[in-house]
Length: 119
Image (cartoon, rainbow, N blue to C red; front, side, top):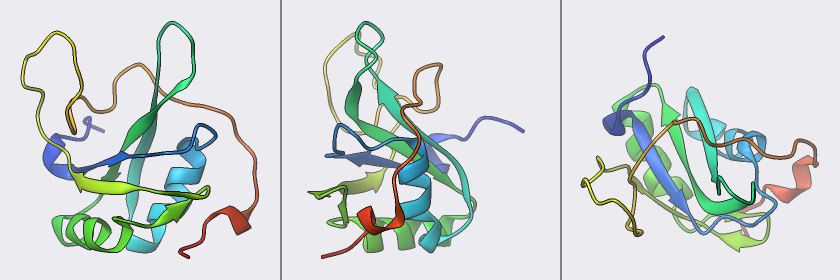
């Protein structure tokens, strides 16, 4: 399977330190067929950079995910969800949505379903 393009992805920021790929997948599966999820980790510390990407199978579901999940509370934090943007070519610095499903990511597994609430 080819790697998801930015058009197929949501950029998710404001994640809790404890939020991992699995938690992101569970939260977003209400919006459609989640193809891939990745919480981006710092390559030096292995700690979450508190943002990630979610690839969803079709454009309608991506738009639904942006509308539904923007402001959603995940692990007691309100997340921000936008359409992922292609990298601008900068060598460093933030900005919303650069990157995608690279070699970084992962995280702890476990937890329970009551952490995925919208309230």
